[in-house]
Length: 450
Ligand code: GBH
Image 1 (cartoon, rainbow, N blue to C red):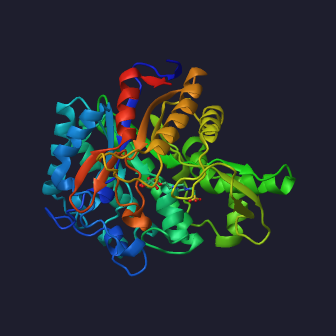
Image 2 (tube, rainbow, N blue to C red):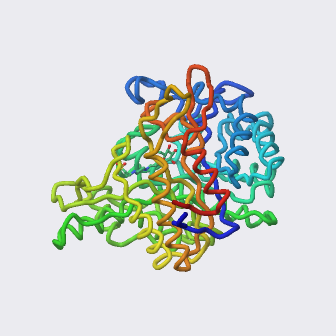
C-alpha cells in the first residue's frame, strides 16, 4: 500500500446538500413558495419541467439520511435552511418551519456529526421577489438580516459553522444576468446590483452574529471560484483571462478581503451598466467585515481567448482534459493553483472546500450496486491536490463532497446525478454508490491509499 495523500487527524470530512434540491414538502408546515418553485413551474426553465416538489423527500426521510451519513462516517454535514419555511411572509416568523431544522440538528448531534448550515442557498421567498425583484431591492438586506438573526437566536451555537451565502456569483450573475437560474433575468446592471446587495447582506449578517457573541461558532461565506487560464501566451489572451478571473472570482473576493471592487472590472462594467450609483458610502466597509473562514466551491477551470465583440472580451475554449456529464473539464491541478493563490493573495484564514464533486452517468447494475469509478477518480485527484496544499503549510481544514445524494440539479432537474448516494426517484430508495464506500475508507484512514 502506498499512501497517496495524508490528512491531519482533525480534518473535517463532510458531504453537502441544499434545501430546495433535496427537501420536497414544499407546501408543508407553513412553507410558502420560493423563486425556485415559481421558476421551475414556468414553461421551459428546467429540464422536462422538473421541480423540487418532491425531490429526495428529505423533509420526511431526514432520519434515514442522517443514518446514511453515519454509515459513511462523515464528521460534518453541510445543509442549507429554506428561508420561506422560516419567514413564509414578510416579518412573520414560522416556528414550525424552524422545528424541522432543530430535529435535523438533533439527529446529527446524537451521532457526533457537526452541522454546517448555509443560510441562503438560492431559495429566496417569492414574497421577497414580489417586492421589487428580491435582491434588486436594497430592502432585501434588512429581510435577510432579520431571517439570519432569527437563525442565530434559535440555533446559534448548535451550528459550529455558519455560512452566510452559497455562491453569490450564481445568485446574482447566473440568476439576474445570464437568466439560467431563478428569477431568470437577463440584465447585467441588475446582476451587479443583486451581487452588491447579496454581499452587503453577508456583511450585515456577520455584524449581527458578532453582536450576539455566539460562543464556539464561526461564520464565513462560500464562493464558487473558477480559475481562468489564457488559451495562449498572447497578451490579448492574457487580458481575456484577467477579465474572466475578474468576472468569476475577483468581483467577490476583492470586496470581501480587500474592501474594494477590482478597478479593471469597474472600468469594463461601467461601459455596460453605466453608473455604480447603487454603491453607497460605507458599503465596502460592511462587505469586508472580518470573517472566520472562507468556503471554496470548486468544480472546474476555464480557458479563454480574447474576443473583441464579447462583453467580457473573453471567450471560453474547451480545455484538453476529460469532462464530466455537465461538460465541465476535470482539472484537479487548478484546485491546487486556486488554493495557493487564495493563500498568497487573499487570506491566511482557515479554508474549507465546501463543495467539490461531479456528475456522471450512474446506473444501478445487476448486483444492485452503482460502480461510479469515475467519481472516485475525480474525488481522489482533487483530494490529492488539497493534500499537496496542506503539505506546503496551507490552511485547509475540511472537504465536503457535493453531494451526499443525487438531487434536483437546478435547471438540469433530475437529469444530472452528483451524489455519492444514488436516489431512485420512483421508490425514494437510497443506494450507497461505490464512491460512498470508498469515501468511508478515506475517512477511516484520514488519507488515500493505492
Ligand atoms: C454548485 O454550483 C451549487 O452550489 C450546487 O447547488 C449545485 O448543485 C452544484 O454546484 C453542482 O452544479 O458554467 O460551464 O462556465 C456550481 C456552479 C459550476 C458555476 C461551474 C460555474 C463554471 C463552468 N458553478 N461553473 S461553466
